[in-house]
Structures are given as structure tokens and as C-alpha cells.
Image (cartoon, rainbow, N blue to C red; front, side):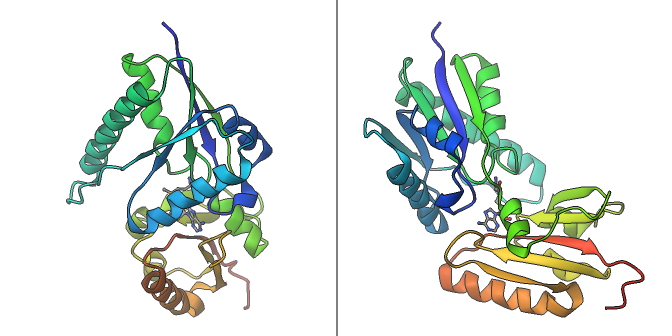
Length: 257
Ligand SMILES: C[S@@+](CC[C@H](N)C(=O)[O-])C[C@H]1O[C@@H](n2cnc3c(N)ncnc32)[C@H](O)[C@@H]1O
């Protein structure tokens, strides 16, 4: 059986200048691009993928296949909601690939940031490949993650010297601040979870990183938490959506400042 070829390409977190040369070469091997179209905020994000294609494709013999991402149920059973959501996405991807990608063609998913960080594309493709209904051969091309841009903009090293790093979500941070970690990078925080952290920490926060509307705030958490909340809320009101992340580090005990 012929295997359909798929490329999962990290495209950076919003700045087309962050697309790597390897990603450009991979895109140019593809002839079908599957592009999500998720509504409001996401129309802008989907258009960024199109901008990237217009800028980097050296041939025009490719087509774009837009798809709508199923909505996640938001009940109290988070894990079950995510499972059901992934199953629905998997079914949709399988149908898309079967119907839209010829056996001799190469398809591509342009994944925000890097596919290894809080993105389900790889898990879904892995499940489709393991399911055996479609024979797939796929490769992953890394991208620059939002966390790299965040650290670069603030000119900081993610880890404290010799210390570990925890990457987590706002939801998990609210449940439990990782104890032994030297630093904590937080993504997907829809609830201002940093506001409930009562330890003495520094924060480096960034929204729309790499994009024209980029906003940065840093300082002692207790001093800047309100400023971050205000900037976050007013930006979300103005644009209708926000993407932000932050890094927290415990302050040294003997730090006088
Ligand atoms: C579903 S995750 C995807 C992460 C992505 N794979 C990456 O490598 O950055 C989405 C979260 O990433 C963070 N994020 C992505 N792009 C961002 C950006 N341009 N500025 C700030 N945060 C961003 C936000 O925390 C957002 O909630």
C-alpha cells in the first residue's frame, strides 16, 4: 500500500521571520496545506498561515484545505472532555487526509510554535497512523516556540543555575505551584492564575509575542500582577482574543530588592 506523506511543520508563534529555513524547504515539498479555521481570534491566526505560505512558497502548485476544529465541551470532567474532543478531531483529520490528500501527494500541517509543546497534532496523527485505516509516513520540522520568544524578549535564561524548569498551564498552576522547580513557564492561562500565587516570585510576562501588538511586563510578582491583569484585560477587549505566557522564578531569600 502506498503511504501518504505528511509534514508537521512548526511555524513559530506569530512572527513570519521566525520560520526556519528547514520549514521553508519542507513547505516547498508539500502540495496540500491543511489550515484550521477556528473563528474570531483564529481567523487572524489562519490568515497568518496564509501569509507565511505567500511569503515562502516558491511554486504555486499547492492548494489550501481549510477545516473547522470541533469545539471542546466544557463540563467539570476536563480529562473526559479533552478525550472526546481529541477523538472528534482525529476522526475529522482522518476524513480530511483520506479525501483531500492523494496517495502520491505530500500534505502539511502548519503548527503554531513547535509541535512538541501543548499541541495535539502529533498525538492525533500518531493515532491515525496506528489505527491503520490510512497508511501514513510523516516527519516533524521544529519551530520556534512562544517560550523561546518570551525568554529572548526579556533577555533571560529560562532556568536558574543548575535548577529544573516546569512547563505548565494556568489551570495546573492554580491547583499546585510546582515545589522543587527553579522556574515555571506558564501557558494557556485563561484565568490569571499568577494572581493567586502567594510566594515571593519574579514574573516575566508577554502577550502577542513576535507580533506587532506585542506587550511585555516584568518585575516582582506582587508589584506587577495588577498591571498585567489590566493590560491583559484591555488587550483582550480591544482585539477580541489574547495569547500570553509567562515565566515565574522564586526570588532568592537573601535578595534584598
Ligand atoms: C495551544 S498552546 C501552543 C503552543 C505552541 N505550540 C508553542 O510552541 O508556543 C497556546 C499557548 O501558547 C502560548 N502562546 C502561543 N503563541 C504565543 C504568542 N505569540 N505570545 C504569547 N503566548 C503565546 C499561550 O500561552 C497560548 O495560550
